[in-house]
Every structure is written in C-alpha cells, then in structure tokens.
Image (cartoon, rainbow, N blue to C red; front, side):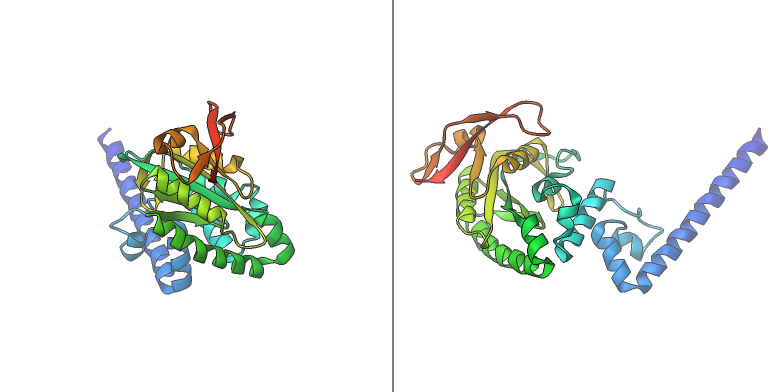
Amino acid sequence: MARKEEARSAGATAVRALRQQLAERAAAVLRQDPELRSTAIEVGLVDRAWVDEPGEHPVRTSSPVEVVQRFLERSIERKPSVLGGVGLSAIQLLAAGSTTEDGGSPIPIAITFTDLEGFTSFTASEGDEHALDLLAQHHRTVGPIVRSRGGRVVKRIGDGLMLSFPSPEAAVHAALELVDAPPPPLRLRAGVHCGEAVVSGDDLIGHDVNVAARVADAATGGAVLTTVELRDAVGPLRDVAFGIPESLRLKGLDDPVDVCAVSWR
C-alpha cells in the first residue's frame, strides 16, 4: 500500500513538473513575440502576470465567456462586418455574461444600452473602412455627452455601447441627447433601466444590467425606452415626457417588463 502511495506521489510530482515546464516554454514563446503576447493578453487567453512569471500565477482569471466576448470585441473593432456573421445584436453581445455573479457588493446605478439601427446593413453595403469611420465619428460624439452627465462608457462592441450613470435623471437626459446626435445616415436606439449592479473590473454584472439590455433591444431607431421602475425613480421632469406604459415580454426574462417611451417636452 505504501509503495502505491509513493508511486502516485511520484507520478503527480512528475506531472506537475511537466506542466510547469510546458507553461514556462509557452510563456517564453509569447515573450519572444510581442504581437502574439499582446493579443493573448488582450482577449484573456492568458494573464499578463502569468506571462511574466508562469510559475507564480494562474494561466488566466478570465472565464470562457469573457474570453469569447473579448475576442469578438477585438475582431469587430478591426473588422465591423464580423458582427453580421455572429447572428446577435451588439447589445446582446455587450450583455453576454451580465447575469454571472462574482460575489461582489452591488451598488445602485442607472444603466443604458445603445446601438445603431441598420449598422450591419450599412457595413455590408459600404464596407469595413466606411463603417470604422462612422463608428469613430459616433464615439467622438458619445464621449462628451456621456461625461457631461456624469456617466461613463463601460464597454463597447461594434456599434453597441453599455453606459452607466450616477442617477436615473442623468441616464434619461443622456439617452435623449444621444438619440438626437446619431452618425448619419443611421438612427440610434436606447434602453434605460436603474437598479443594482456589481462592478467587476471594466464591466457591470447583474439582473438589472440584463433588463436594460433587453429593453434597448425592444426599442426602435430614434427612440428611447425606459422601464417604469426608472420612470418612478426619476419622478416628474420639466423637460422630459414619459409615454403610456406598456407591458412587454422580453427575451431572456421570465416576467413581463413595463416600459414607456421617453421624449423631450
């Protein structure tokens, strides 16, 4: 019995040594190729700390979903036409993994998702170069509007944006301003919700994030949809009008969501 245990222990030690050797060789290959190293770290296949010290850190901390999402984000940034082949909207890609809890403490927050109606068709007809120019113009417009309302661009994939704001009022005003300033010839649509989310690195996670994404997916170009929860949290606004509430069945959510259109007075 003792010999069996010794043999198992020796075998396990040998396997660990082999794995360590392979890890060191793989890390050495990445260090010798800056472009390959940068790509592997960017998409989350490996962590930066592991490349530098493979024996002291785990290979990666990103989940498989995060790796796929980061890979798609990188690919779409370089070639927007990739989005058309994925079969999902930019909003759906942004929200992927948003319901995976990581044990952090939730904070109150207002969340907005936007994308550009007809972007996939525009890319197919005009090409990636024109699509990249349009996105650059769009992002130059978005940044000042979001920042002026105290918000931030959490992340973006293609024409889709996830935005966060410190208050529901700020989120509503920013959404309306963004809808008024789309890159021609496309129209922007937005969905806004408020609740709680866990801040995880450069991402927001939680059920309310998913709700905001689904509401945005239900909006049409040139329109802003909000949940009734957000409307009630905002209260009366002198310059904003909330439409008659409508109950919608939204994909990925068990219960109907009450939403209303928003416009300037």
